[in-house]
Length: 272
Length: 203
Image (tube, rainbow over all chains, first blue to last red; front, side):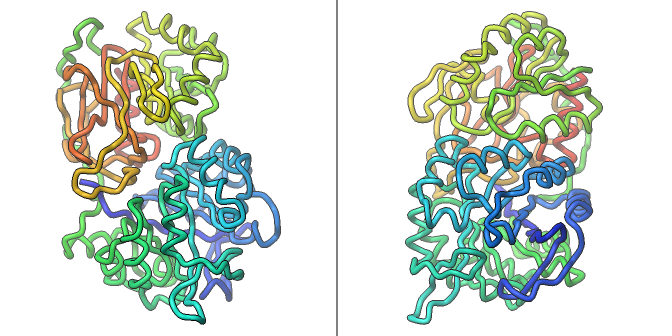
């Protein structure tokens, strides 16, 4: 059975890892490479790495650094930040990203999603959607690290990116981000039920029960940062908790003996 | 043990190379089919669409050269994800496209049975259909990382080494003689992935 994924998010700014609140008030929380190494030994299910300055500074992704990070990453790595054109995606995948996350560029050039999906397959195209409550009521998507209102409703935008070929949606509540007050469950339920691709809940996890709530409301996976940076809570303990709630998570690998070395019955070629 | 990773312009090669190095192999990433002559193990990785992958393999001359070197049973080929799918006779992703035809079968899109989301993304269990040295120290139920919308339907049951439950049962590992395919990513499957890679090197 497919497992619910627990995904630490690493926000990367000027050579360091940071974590803020409401997409602001950034605090340094270490450096990228050691964090990736530690998370690998702890058998996290995936990692998301976002360069939060690239778009703001109008520059491309930092391929050299991504190559350096991906060398130490033996779980799937999604890389976002600064992607504007197909060539940026090509270069990130060559640098070792397994999936790429598009946010701001998707609003300006929705066909970028389609191009990327056609070229590399939907499975490596994550569309990242940052959401705030709209003054007019309901929700609204924001681009440029949560600073620029797009006028789009997350549910209809999610449907649109799905139809363009997005493979997953990383759905972040900009208001809940870093607050550790819990995910925006209403938003998660609305978007998850609107699309047939996996939705990764992000923004607001403060304890394991919050994660469980997001999953019951339709999320396929859980992204979290502050809870792992600023508390004693860990991805492994999160999994143990979720298991008690009847949610299927990946157990630690136990080698055991496996299948015995019996020659493989192949009709016309030598046994391996 | 020298491992050649085929660079045919389809996706993330560095991770595959790094994982094999971590498992003790000497790795080269090559875009020249002539390099196949000196490889003990060949890896066909790949992220992307079936027609693009196949076209790139044909244009660069990989297809014929692979056929030639794989006549030697000591040389083993591992296709990963799209690389596994390209081993099939035909792909149904976009235009119907002939594959390498190394293992009889076709590649089809998942059809949700119980509201499953497609792509199939994440960690899922594999269960052995046959005993094989490739599965040494991989008990049934071990999780591997999958990310795909299409799957390999093998024509012969004997070519199926392990299956996974999603939209029904699909083939997670196929094998025929010295040719192997894994739908999941061993290079991104943490310790159990390394175990499988070491098993492949030791075959």
